[in-house]
Length: 210
Ligand SMILES: Cc1cc2nc3c(=O)[nH]c(=O)nc-3n(C[C@H](O)[C@H](O)[C@H](O)COP(=O)(O)O)c2cc1C
Image (cartoon, rainbow, N blue to C red; front, side, top):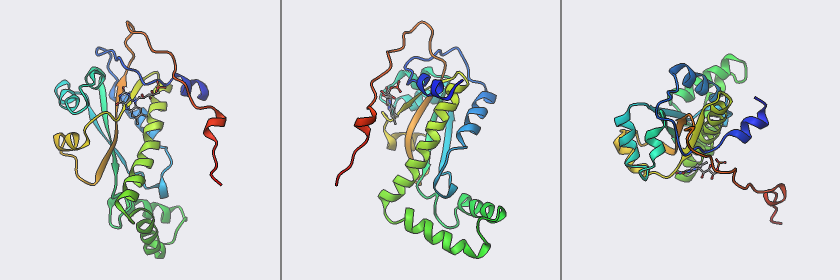
């Protein structure tokens, strides 16, 4: 599919065919493509909880305003954004630095500099930690929805849910913010998709304040 076509055809689909599965292979392909998303210092502070089981999805649905797509979609994802994914000593922070040394981007003696840069940029306040986690996880999530569409799979992002409730229900550690849920599957053929929604124009998007 042409890139423009993929972007235009991605819609937040409200009705999923509960009888059409997304195979593990397909899910892996989608996630592998999504993982190519850019991130701050390549820290990739995103993770996914994958729910396929009917009972598990019902447990999620009760914290998600009862949205039926949570349960109808064959796969529902809890997107996690690691607010501590910049901290010195964190497994992926160190793995990331090691890999930058390996490709010759940094020398080993720059590790402290790297830790300080990350701490100053992302650790300065709670707001900065949430922003760090969510902006990067957002890029990942967008890539995931486009990757899915490119393979003919529909999605629906949701922030209509109770974060604390989901966190407790699925025992998600406190270092994670939950930026969204994503229902994933195939649009139900007996339903009609709403017409595409309006978008801001070029002129409406461009601003300045001086
Ligand atoms: C972060 C985010 C959260 C959203 N949360 C919900 C939600 O909880 N429930 C819902 O029905 N739609 C939700 N949506 C879908 C939007 O309403 C939808 O993307 C928007 O109206 C544009 O429609 P389109 O995606 O079909 O182009 C959400 C979208 C985003 C990006």
